[in-house]
Each structure stands twice: as C-alpha cells, then as structure tokens.
Image 1 (cartoon, helix red, strand yellow):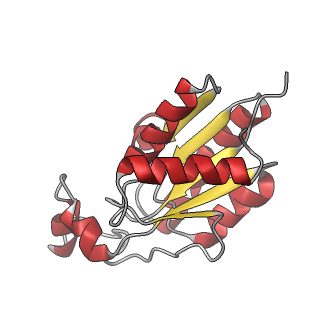
Image 2 (cartoon, one colour):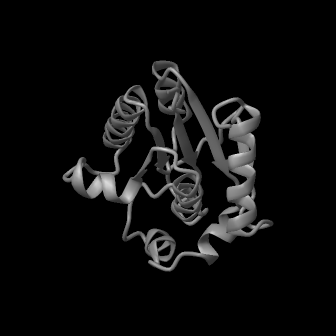
Image 3 (cartoon, one colour):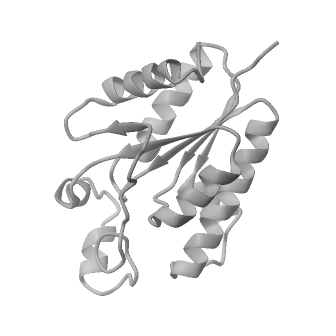
Length: 176
C-alpha cells in the first residue's frame, strides 16, 4: 500500500492562523483515513525544546528539532503537519533540503491582522519591552520566497484555507 508521506510546513507570524489551519487540515486528513501527526510549535517548545530561549540560535535549534521529528514521521509513512513560526528562511530551507518531500504553506497576514488576533497579549507585551526578540516586532520574520502554498487567512475562512491546502497537496501529487 502506497501511503502519502511528506512534511507539510505551516509558517507565518504569531497569530497568523498556523495552528488553527493545521488542525483543520488534520481533521480533513483524518476524515480521509490518511496517517498524519500535528507538530504544533507551542507544544513542541513545551515538550521537546523546554528551556530554549527565543534567541536566534535557540530558535534555529527548535526548528531543526521539529524538522528532524517531521522527517522521521514522513519516513515512516506519515504526513507531518508542522505549525511553527519558523521565522528564518535559511533554516526552513535547510529542513526542506533534508526532507524527501516538503510542502511549505505560508500563512500570509499583515502584522496588524496578527496583532488584532493576539488573544494571549504577546504583541502588546513585546511592544512594551516585556518580551525581547519577538518575531515581527524586534526580530525579523523572513517570508518564504517560493512557498508551494499561500493562504491569506484574513481573506479566507478556516474551511476555505484548509480546502485550498488539501487541493494544492492533491495538485502537487502528495494526496489523491
């Protein structure tokens, strides 16, 4: 049996909708009976990368760890759905190069939209100087140059964005 297996990497600002969209895609894959696992950035940081700071070096370590787990899952017949800010293009490209099959999903929103969705108050705390190195405020987010999929969650519902991701994965030959 040939099962789909690849890394599906959601990237974007905090509050862009990565986790929400990743979970919606996971529900559709579940409905289709497709083996998958969600690696949410916040959950991974709490369990696999606890103790790391938000310095560039520690962020790179965290993203590399997520990438390693994702590649391992994909190697064993699973779609690894990763939802992590992963702000630095070079590390995302490194994960892509090390993966047999990699689909980058850029969740494109403006900083204003992301801040408006901030239920945890992280942007306000970052602007007040309480959270240093916050992506989009005093640390960069490097947009992907050639993502396979772009979703504008400010203009689409979660359901529309999830359908777009699934349709593009079919078009790219990763799903049937």
